[in-house]
Length: 241
Image (cartoon, rainbow, N blue to C red):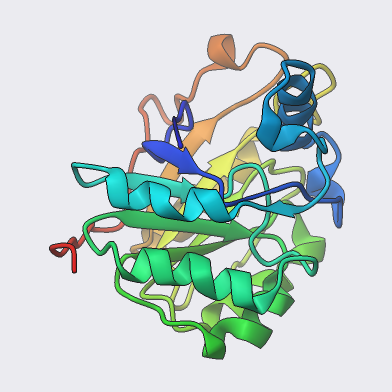
């Protein structure tokens, strides 16, 4: 586990690591870059760089947290990657099921496999399920998400590299928008962001604007319409079992 600088979560937990690219949003994957860095530092967990790996030893970590947390699951991977077995996915879900005092945010680009497996999984109230949608070509991921049993469903429109007009936000609880950052970031037009914010407002969907991105994301900031947008779904926590 690690404290996170990601604006919409508190910490990360990575029972799996590694991935591969499947769509345009993956082009400058921050997890791949970070994995190479960790490998060069000699971190054992990343000795195989960005190859998909499962980590049984990480499954015990959430049981050690003393206070309620908001946790991004697999910031360095994709839980629904084809090389991660249903058996291991069930083990991860079992940990989340057994720790209802925490919120677990799971995010995938592999929405079709998510839909294929969702009926095999136990969706307790504290599991927030999201899909990444970077442009119009992959908006069908939203339809797969919508059919799952997750109580909270969210969209990560990051890096937003194209307009997303007329989104179907039925059964969607939360939308995160962010521009790409790094050495060669693809631009995000303000009109795209404003349109999505208005769509969310019209449908009463929580809207979170993460960043404008760019080569210097700190300088670009995260102000939209003269304010910050930090809206999130209501967090409902229970005692541990």
